Image (cartoon, rainbow, N blue to C red; front, side, top):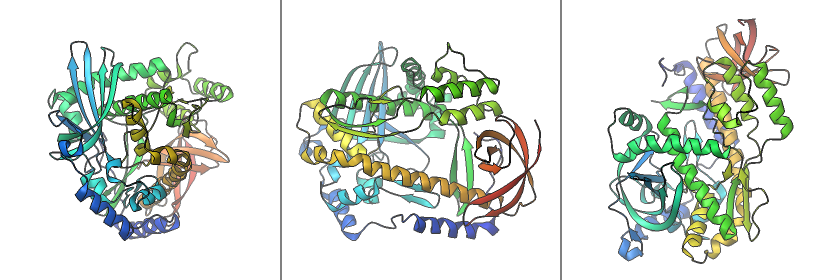
Length: 483
């Protein structure tokens, strides 16, 4: 966690930033509200969908002490877990919100979510995939409330490998909602419920399994826009260990879902092709030039996991590594599985299936997997809708990326407005066309600067010339190189 106080946008620039973020929503034609018929249908579903396990014909798993772990203040809780150690390993229950129960195929909510594709996270507030009546209430796995869920059960061996997997629809009751900071503190203090403590066993072992598969999670620090009492700042912090451990639960489930769909001959995968040999060779040469060579005897994932990520050279290497993870997409199939089903960053076939409140495709994955796992017919709407999903998700992924990048640009410009003439130290992480991409530490601004020719990993001195909050533009000139 950062040791310094993050810089807030100056009050003089805040009004301009608020106007710029509002204009960005209009520029990208983002939805402003749900149509009245969508809201009405969601409200009716929230009131009418049965949650009593006997009435609904569902398993009653309310005796399992599930908990959720999410960012502070989250209300759209897709997942709840319970992890219990055994003499030979552990048993993991992973509950995923039963969104399909609340969405009538071909109805108003279904049509609107197909238009949206996913929840969009804007700097000035998120744009949910589903009406909040569902996403932050009736379908959300909030604590101390009976909730419908798809429950995955994994029997794990002493290496956290799944040796038995089942999936069923049930009613659960989460006991507590944890945020990452408090959950990490509880683990560090050897306190909290058993599920949290067991994650400290599970997560590292699953990282070892990832290494065996040849997967490579970058787990790099991400720049996030944070709003605080109407003002904005940027945070760039490496994930807490428990965030990685929790992500491994989702990865395990996504791989199990992919396996079920591949064996069943129908479904939708999240795929990513392996890096081209020439790109791998170029990356290997880059690591040698930066003084941290990638040995032939070490796997790609193990090399990245072994980097000391705070060094300037490591920042440049990670920037180059991110360029190898390209071409992610969705592949739907019914009959013949895809020729290349692998998600190369994970090192295995993989499916998005753990965030149905926030991502459209997961609704299909859950329904298809539950049917295949239990010998049921796949609902007609799910099978018929598969071919359209890659296009829908591709379009929404592109929109989400544009929104995120443009919002960060505008907040960066606002943070620097009023500091024209100030100088900043920055690390060159890679070259881009006629300049270089650099990373400033404080505030955490990543930007391309024209005319910079210093090698990746070098530190340069930059002077701020001008900013434009409306377009998110920042102009910097190189003053001198410090190394």
